[in-house]
Image 1: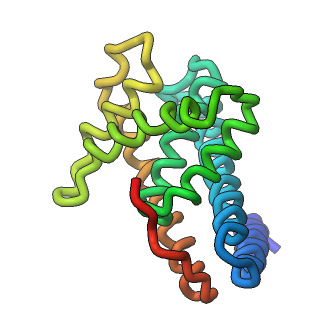
Image 2: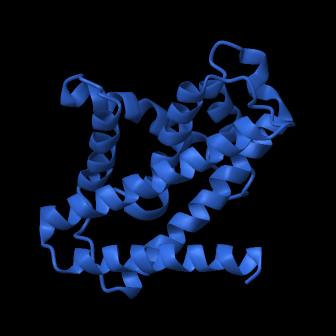
Image 3: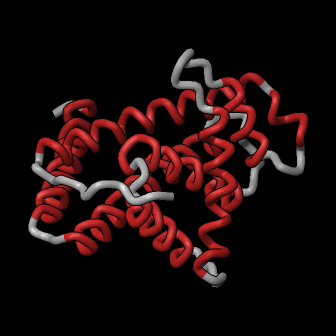
Length: 197
C-alpha cells in the first residue's frame, strides 16, 4: 500500500465517520438537531483552521511565519465560521450561535451572550461586504482578512502573497463546506426554515 492509498483510506474513513454523524442528526428534532449540526460544523471549522495555521506556520516560505499561533488561529477560525454560515447555514441563526457558543466555550471566553455574539458580528459583516460572488474577484476580501490577522502591522495586509493564500484557503474551505451541505441533503437532513437576523 503506497502513501497515496494510505491517505485516501484515512480520508474515506473520516468521510464515513462524518456520514454517520449526519445520519444521527436525522433522528433528532428541532433544537437538538440544530445543536448537533452546530457541533459538527464547529469541529469541521476548527479542524480546517488548525490545519491551515499549522501548515502555514511550518512552511518555510510562508508569509505567515512569525505570527503568534493563537492569534493567527483565532482569526482563521472566525473566518472559517463565517464560511460555514455563508456556505451551509445561511440565516439559520440558532446554528450560527451554536458554533459560536462552542468556540467561546473552548477558549474560556466569559462575556455576556450578546457581547460574545457581537465579537463575531463585526467580522461577518465585513466579510459579507467584501466577498464578491458576482465577479469572483476576492481581493478586497483577502485584504480585509489580512487586516484582521496583521492588525498591528498594517502594511502586511496589502501584500499580494498574503491575500492570495487567504483567498485560496477561503475558496477551498467554502467548496468543502458546500460538499458537506450536499451530504446533509443526500442524507435526508432537512433544516428548519431560517430565522431572521
